[in-house]
Amino acid sequence: MRDNGRAARTVGFLLGLTDEETAERVRSRIGLPSQEDPVALRRRLARPWQWPGRLPASVALWMLEQDDPDLNVTVWRYLTTDSGLRRAVCRGVPFGPGRTEPLPPPPTLAGEEPEVPESYVHHGLVGSLRRATAMKTARAAASMVLTRDDWRTVTAADAERPLPGYARWALSVRPDCPPALRARFGSHAKFTHRVRQAGVFDGPADYATAHGPAVDVLDLLSLGPCAFPARARAAEDALRPLVQDHLGRREDAWAVLAQLVETFHGTVPELVMTAGAIA
Image (cartoon, rainbow, N blue to C red; front, top):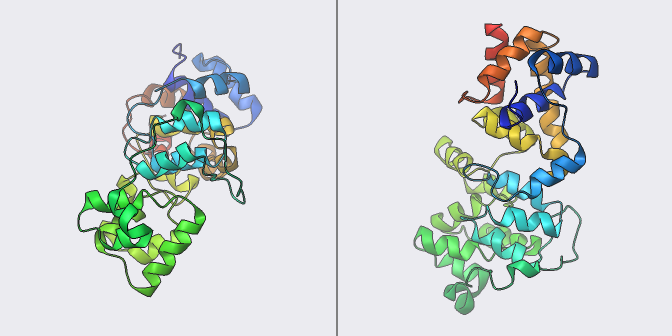
């Protein structure tokens, strides 16, 4: 493998789940570059528009939980459909567990906050959600739910009298929606499928094992030590047994994986098992 691109990074990430001796031997066999050091990871993380397509909503939230103003600016570029998170970043709302002090609003995002919905101005948070009669107005109202106190207010309002369906849907596809509230909004298969399509996952292990294509998932996970270190371990722990069972110390299996990874459309477990079975 001579390309020091996504394929090399993704195979390298999975090799990091093995022992050092196996990793060195496989790297030599397939011509894989050395693993990126923290400086290289931070440099890649800061590179604008490096990820194809849309950054999954939950992954964006895990990055925002770092409460790193520079990282927040990077993530903000990918929040094109989530006005609520964009508004929160512009206002310096903290996302890290236990953090209450606001962050310094990023100077480069001055004047970039989405417009405050007129319904919110006239009716407040709960009032605007209750008056949402279409998805557009529901998304606009939901974009004003910014802090943990706001989510508690919404939870209490829904418990008192269920919010309209559009409002429930707009809130449920927010990655920062409390899991208990999302579960109250709906649990049938169609609902959970739409939540998943919006890029919302139960956690890093769910993202690592259920999302695809595998190369996209692994490329993002390879940034975990810098982008979402508090969450990265859960994804690694979910994949490590698969790597050990289906690839292990088999150089031929790793060589097949390197050939498949760039064009494989399934999930990471499917990729790992396929490479192991072919070898």
